[in-house]
Length: 542
Image (cartoon, rainbow, N blue to C red; front, side, top):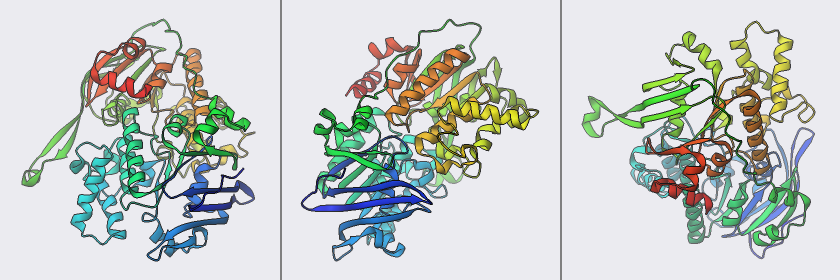
């Protein structure tokens, strides 16, 4: 079902079809976007919504694309051209200037060899007649607009030195650098906490109104659609099944798939508090994490300063329980997780099953099996050169070197089935590579890789941030079931108050590296004492 025709469309997409070999993944999609309009394209992971958007700029490799994508106002002459017929050289002039993209996974989209400021300034210099100094100043201004603290210092940082949310905001700043006519926003708030999510939506809305910019937003967040979009288009298995004004579609959905999405908001059902037996599986006392940073001016030639990312944090994680760590991006919660995993040196006392990390590979190996992790960005944490069988089975090869190949394969298949990935659903599953899966499916691969060695503690760094509503509900239920059946302990790092309410037994709230509030999750969320906690809870309800 195609969208209703608009009088003066900025983008007129007609019968778009995208195939990989003999498999057609986008089938006859037609939609239109007017200048200054906000259209949300929604659907589950694998529905084809991201491929639809990326195909407009020929950003999907090894894909056969047919159809028409008429775009109004291209180039200096402002002519109407078919994007799908432009040469690669012509498209380089369009990308970033007329049509910009906010990618779903910023760690893979940003160049690790250049600072954030350099990458934003490069876009400005490429498309606008400005000096290097002017481009750099504009880059710092854009970082400030997207809510990054200390934008002058952060502009000098490399992507790996930023938190997940800060990297996402840097991507947004880069996309908005040249004030494009159309913004393709692929899950633009996936990695952002609730307060910054609202700020970014307000920023995009303000820029859209000021500059007449159109926005095609790809998302699985139905709350975001209600708040931001003018119209919504729903995709299922590569087909556009329903579209129309947001209020109309949400109030009276016509297609069964649309009704399914609207009925799939995760059920908030925290598990009863299990009895705590034995000592804590993980404990931290006075944990500090410091990063060296250059001093400004000539002083930086002779000495370096330091930045305290985590300051004197105390926590205890008993067996079979979930400790939630919540806070805005940059609060230090992911750094605390890295310290708990033994991946980041720290000061103070930090132990796993009574043993401290020694930061020596052989001596820490037993603890590596006991503590596994699911990272926030699954694509950057999964090797693109390894198959699913190699990725998921890698831990078994390290911790169970004597396991027979057939037994290892059976363990891998059982674990994949536990997270909802089967050979029947994905033929040739074990021999596939990560890039052949959607964002949500890759997150399930990351979960399977962590679970296959049967750990005692699972560190979950934003485990559902990349998942659509139906899969999020399944993953939360899966994690709760695994905790009951296996007695797993979870250190849950998140900015999603709803996920904490569903999963956590105890909660600590972090701000600027410090714990500002802690206690049972119901007490903290229902009766928050600290103004910062009150702000987080209020923003999640809004």
